Length: 459
Image 1 (cartoon, one colour):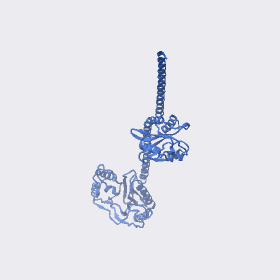
Image 2: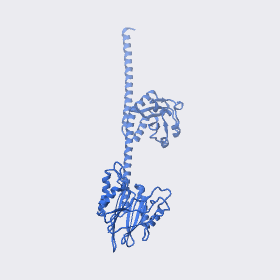
Image 3: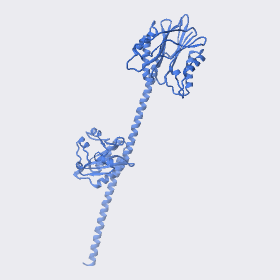
Image 4: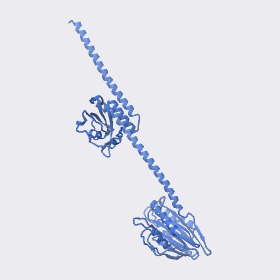
């Protein structure tokens, strides 16, 4: 063979080699372009929604399609419990799958979540890490699989697995690398969706809590209106041929509703009945007990009945073996004409008698136990007299036991000084000044107990 022929042959071989290299490069470029396009498609799919359930469905569908697999699943990590769970499971047995929880390290998915390593399994049943917990529940045989961690910001938030390569073949190492590449944008989108889902749930919980709070506040306002509707809101004046009496009171619960109560009304022709009490608790339980007590007092009080007889009858109705509620109480019947005051005291604060000449004394007599403490309690009656120009002041311990910021109490001494100072004031002025003086003493400290004051004047 001459030189020319050899050169020609060499050139032909070189051209063939260059052509093959060109074809190979083009195939590699096409493969890379195809891989890039697949990743681009995945990014488009997973970034098309921010809602977690929609995103999970898209991830599962896209992963199965790209990897030419029969099925795909996303298993999320519950950091608090150290478990993996299926947040979304499709098909007839989806509810059953969602109940399944895997511990970290359990099964192939648990191993991937624990180690952070991807895995390709050609025969799932023969792999020592294999757990048939899910397959048995859904009755779905797993032949082969790929499983990769979903990592976002150096934290494993779940695993992505594809099951059973179509056409009876096995997954390749190139498939595994592709799935690892797909997992990166999926993890970022999934974490954003999870954060959005958590925010949405928090907002819903906040709205629910706010609505419940507003509803409760509305109901409490209604309850407070109902409670205040049970007590007289204006003064009561009763006049006889010999004299006149006037009764007026004020009440201020520590909460929307409370346990302090009062009442006054005419009994017979020439008598005034009055009562002031303090339930042991505060809030709704105290308000309910107070309502029952007031209903019994008003329902059972009749002309000719003494205060002691009334409290004995009411206590019999209120007492329950398993109840921890009770109420201190003072009630009386004042004869307008004679000034004779018949009263019964169920463990209440000592009332004050302010005489016309300015002298003061505490109303003392035999005491009984608070209502609701003992079922067979017989309440005694006591007698005193109100001359014309005398005043009776009854109050609850929310007045004397009011505290300032240093837990010092208002006390009886301050109350006595105020009553003496305001001895010539009208009932309305006295009631207003009593509450104001307590508030001034408290100096911004939170009111810890209900306050109520009742004033009876014989003119």
